[in-house]
Image (cartoon, rainbow, N blue to C red; front, side, top):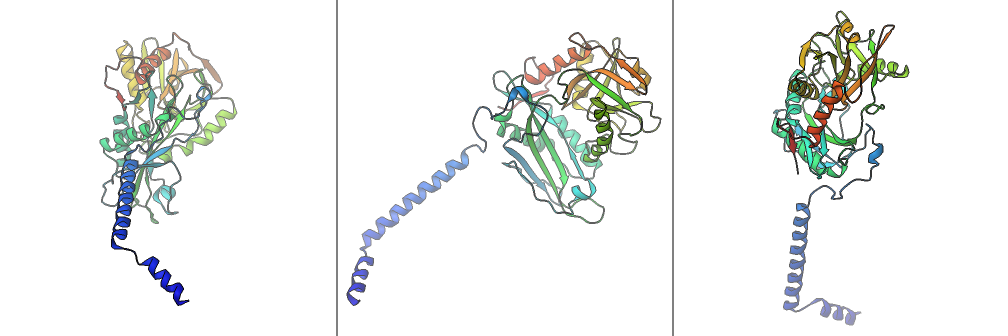
Length: 386
């Protein structure tokens, strides 16, 4: 036993130069590992394949989560921390979060498009940022600055570039969401807020694709009332339309047209898009008076129509004017510019002009051309992000 211990001691007691070589070797590998880690951190967070594995020719408007989302937090001081990209996934919320109990949240919708040369384009994201600020003020929430908002959208689009459909196959729908994530029991603003931007590749919003829509004028339910939050993209605006929308779809209609809540005689908007009425060279759309969302696509189409010599009027549009119109079309980030083929009001069904020579199609062609880069952007509406 003593002889065995003695041999073990001889093996453990090594010369000093052997210890030094061991330390040098360890230091070398440690430095190499640190360098490798730094290089790994420099690599982009996103995957680098050209396209995700998606059937682009059969892309509808459903959730196909892209790889990454952007997250930014805001505490009681009202200042948002620096945001960061993370893998798309579930988030953790307290059961007493303001968004879950009192619906304190708003969202935006914008899109990224791919040019034929592969470049990615965003359409007027600064206007989405301003609209979110106005909505946040109405819902008593802090909001990201315009620069913070646009930067978050850019990062999300670029990180998920392989999910942006090929030119002409669709777009990457980007959803910025601001919510009261902090816990609260009594009715009041949440103590903490979370700003998330996620994305999904999408095709046409309606199952009809680019075919004309069939709308139903709703008389029982209303979408918004004066003094409410109908003019902002509060999450509380959307669940109440589901019953009327579901009933209309069960009867074969594409969507619902809502009337004002007071007289129920003036057009407001559809479930998720603005409405335009064409009579001759005049294009009318319901005025935004606090119950109607000021759509960014709406505003853009109005400017394009004015450029083409149409008289564009914002006013209270009586339902009888709609039933006597030449054309009707809808606009929105999700729907784009969609023609309306028929509208049913009470027991009357009216058909409208559609097709390649329609006003709707002419305006749509210009808008889509600017959004996708096939028409020169002389208005500064498009932002290239790569």
